[in-house]
Image (cartoon, rainbow, N blue to C red; front, side, top):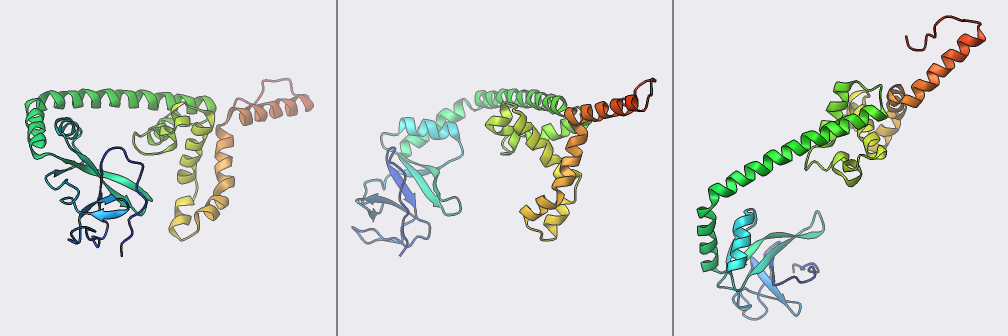
Length: 253
């Protein structure tokens, strides 16, 4: 028998999409049920739960969903358990048929206005993304002045891609913390300047692959960091002084 995972805290009426469709209604025994309601821990079909007259509106159209819910005197959120992620995910709404029809009419009436608004929002987000990538690249150059400018922009563009989940889109990345910026640079060096990707493709476990290329990554970062550059300049000047050289320092050559 299919076990329904523990549902999330109620926030209105909840209807569950059955994962394997093995459940039957505890009252009328109809089944298998594509959708069901849990009442006192037992499944009931939509008809027995007095929801059978509602129609299913899949998620995806924000305006249609909002307007349908506003116009419907009775509605329910439809969820399904995602085994891979271990959580319930929203699939859509059950709403009254007349409410859905009214919402569709309203959406058709102002479709052009909403299209223009979406276009404006898309342009605004694109401008924000460009500005943020430039700020991220500038911070890379500040922390790693030895990093070539074009490379800094490439790293920044990759790390800050909207919706990517990469370090540049994290809270620390948006705040341009040194830790997040360094993590982005280190990741880029790992994939570009070392055989890390080849190791993964040949079956080397990720922790072992990272261990093998760690020294190569740090070597590149030392070349790009200001502290190591300053240490090198200081050492050169001290060596020249000890040798009795009075000519120009060779550190900047």
